[in-house]
Length: 136
Length: 136
Image 1 (spheres, helix red, strand yellow):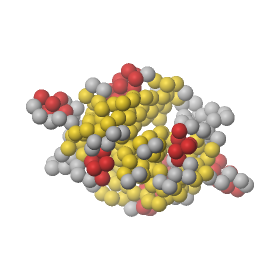
Image 2 (cartoon, chains in turn orange, green; image 1 turned 90 degrees about the vertical axis):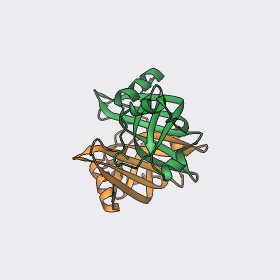
Image 3 (cartoon, chains in turn cyan, brown; image 1 turned 30 degrees about the horizontal axis):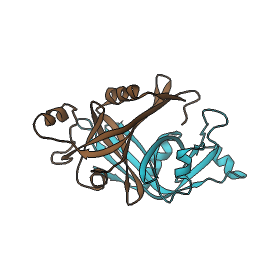
Image 4 (cartoon, rainbow over the protein chains, first blue to last red; image 1 turned 30 degrees about the vertical axis):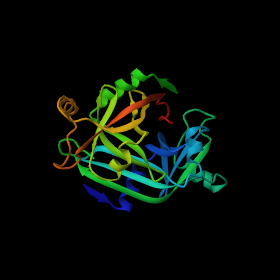
């Protein structure tokens, strides 16, 4: 298993976006996991959320975890995990244009009104060769 | 968005396995997320773990969350989430043969010695049409 450095991880996050990742949050002490469409602004993961369990658990959480992976990328499997504080993204003025530049389109109009952003505390990744299928 | 019933979710879990899913656990109050190769025994997710953060956080946890998804499956995106208690899987006698039947091969010999199993409390899923790309 190979540990990827932060720059490689950010590059993979950016290369793949907009795409699907998974957000893990703690709800009443238990883990919960949600798929989200995400985009990147520099080293920050951004995503949109409607009102609900995901938003309530994520907003202002000191630590959420976000993950992307690919099981077979040119003979390797890899995974990148971002851990950090989740905040509402500023949507006033030029910030909104930057957010819109992530091309995160909500599926249904009127849904997913809130832009959220992870301020990364750590961005880590690992890569394994896909011999006999790969295995974490 | 369409809610899938439990039988559809279990069918998707089984159809895809052995494959990669993501395990979310709580570590010192914070969410952590790990990719794992998983297999199914009836409605139970099984996976293997070496010693480490994942194993310590998962074993005997009252609630872990496990997720698989596909962003573009014949015009739809879908996600299935299993929530339940995580226990060591029995490996004596016939149980070991059943576990081996999941074809979960460890990548490196000597690693991933412990078989873990999620006793499902809930298995839920949802499906969205992939119009303009899909969006959760």
